[in-house]
Image (cartoon, rainbow, N blue to C red; front, side, top):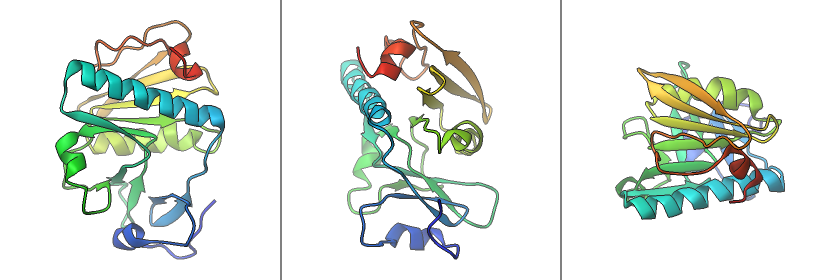
Length: 195
């Protein structure tokens, strides 16, 4: 579902307000409302965000994980702008702190996030598997996770020369991440949002 009848520029997107609490992604200049998703969708996003935050503390990296709080401006090859809001974004603490007095969007001239996560829903499935991987690869985001409870799989995409190599994990297989090599979670734990 789209909202704007006319396309808008990125600067307009940053200041757009319609008087509701609705969050929007901007895709080729068009506002796309983000649905709340199911309870399971939210539980998966919350679980992986909590796991990342705990793991970041344990390995003492200067990173933070934010759940649906950071936009990522994306080049799509059109004259209209795109800005995604991943379910979870892992970024440097310094970068997060730099957003304290501005919109929390990582712009094209800034370093990319360390990792982004999308949780698949019926309405986002095509974008999560088709559009977003190419956008995130162009931004040189080192790792992209696709958490898909509909297909019962976790896909980890690792950047290799602006193209993602993707590995799927199911059931009790331990998920392997180059960003978090010591994280010990199975696909089932992630998709059930339970340790």
